[in-house]
Image (cartoon, rainbow, N blue to C red; front, side, top):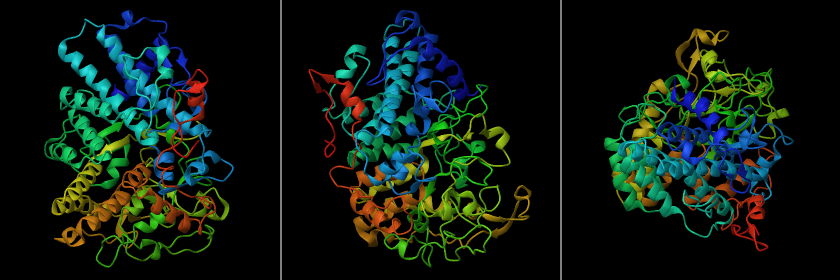
Length: 601
C-alpha cells in the first residue's frame, strides 16, 4: 500500500476518533475520546504523525468537496493557485464573473479581512500545526519507542510544523506561534506580535539534524528536504551567507527520500505526470492518490478540482485558473533563444481571443521557449494527448473576454492513463498528480539567487543554465500528432511551434552585473515555476511586487475585464489581512489579542 493511501485511510480515521472537537478560532482541538495516555504507544504516535502528513493536502473532513465544517476545498489548496499564482499575475481566476467572486477581489487586491478565503486558509494551516503538536505532546509521554524512533518522529513532526508555519508566515507575516507547550484553552489568546522566523528555522534545523537521508516510505520527508527548507527560510530573510552552504550541500550531496541523487529529470513534464512522480527532482512533494476506495476525491488533489478546461472539454468542470496573456508573452525568445526580460509584452504571442473554434486560426510563428506548451493550453497546440486545444470551445467566458483564451496544463492528467490517475468520484475531477512544494529546479534557481546576491555571478549563471539546458533538450518540444483524429496513436517529429531556446553565453551574467543577473534569475523563476503557486511570494520578497503587479494590471486590463481596477499598494498588499473571524474569536477583555496587518484597519 502506498504511503499516501495509508495516511488517507488510517490517519484520518484515527484523527476523527481522537481529536473530535475544535476551538474554532485556531482549530486547536481539545482532547477527544481517547486520552493522550492511551495514544502514548508507538502505533498511536505513528497514527498521529500520519494524520499530520494527511493534513498537507488541506482536505480532511467529510471526504466531499468541503472540509473543516463548510470550507470549500479550493479555498485552502496547498498549490496556492489563488494566493500565489493568481495574485502574482500568472493566471486569471477564470470561469465567469459570477462564480467564486471572492477570488477576483484577491486577484485585484481589493479584499478586506472579511473575505472568507483567508479564514479558510488560516484554519487549514493551523489544523496542520495542531496535528504536529499532538504528535510531539503524545511522543513526550511514550516509553514504547527507541531513542532513534523518538528522534525520527519528532523530526518529521517538526518538519511538517515548519512547513505549515512557513506557509502562514509568507501569507500573513504576523501570526501566533502555537507549539506543543501551549494548552488548548490558551491557544486562542496567543498574540501575533513575535517574529516567528527563528522558530521556523529551529524546526527545520532539528529536522535536518535528526532525519535520515532516505525513508522506507517515499512520502515521508528526509534530511535533505529539511536542509532545503532551512536554506529557503534563510533566503526569505535575505540571509544569503547562511543559505549558501546549505544549498551547496543539497545540490552536491542531496538525495530524495527514495534514494535518488537530486537532478533535473530529462523531461520537464515528468514533474507533472502521476506516472513519473517521486523522481530525482522531487525534494518535497505532497502525495496524491486517485481511486483510493473512499468514493471521494478527498485525497486526489481536491484543492485544484476547479482547474480544468470547461465547455466541450472532456474534463466536465470548471474553467478556472486560466493563464494570463502576460505569462504567455513571457515565453517569447529573441533571435538567439534568450528570454526578452524587459519588453516581452511588446511582442505578444498570437492567440485566438475573440475567434470562435469553428473559425480559422493560425498559431504564432515566432520563436518561443518550449515550456510555454507544457504550462499553457493554447489553441492549435496538442493539449498533452487529448488532441489539439480547440480554443473558445474549452473556455467558459463567451468570447474569452473575461479571463482570456488560455487553459492550465501542469495539473492535467493524461488521456492514456486516466483510468489509473484521474478520479471521477465527484462533480469535478481529481488526480493522482503529486503536488511539488519544492522541486530541484526551484532549488537551483534559489541557489542562483543566493550566489548572485553574494557576487558569485558565474556560479549563478551555471545554475540558471542547467535549468535552461533541460528546457532546450528537444525531448521537451511538443510535437504534432501523427493522426490528429486519434491523438493516442502518437506523434510526428514535427514540433508544434517554432521553439527556440538557448543557455546564456559564457560571461553573460558578469556583463550584466549583479542587478542584471538578478533580473534574469527572477525571470527564469517565472518561466520555470509558472502556475506552481510561487509568483506572488517571490515578487514580495524581491520587493518588486508594486511595480510588477501594477504594470500587469495596466497591460492585462486592456485585454480582459476581470482584473480592471486592480491595484497593489506598497506597505499593505505584501501580506493578506488577518481574517476578521480570527480577530473576533481572539477577543479578551473586549479587545482582539491578534493585531491586524498594516493597511487593513
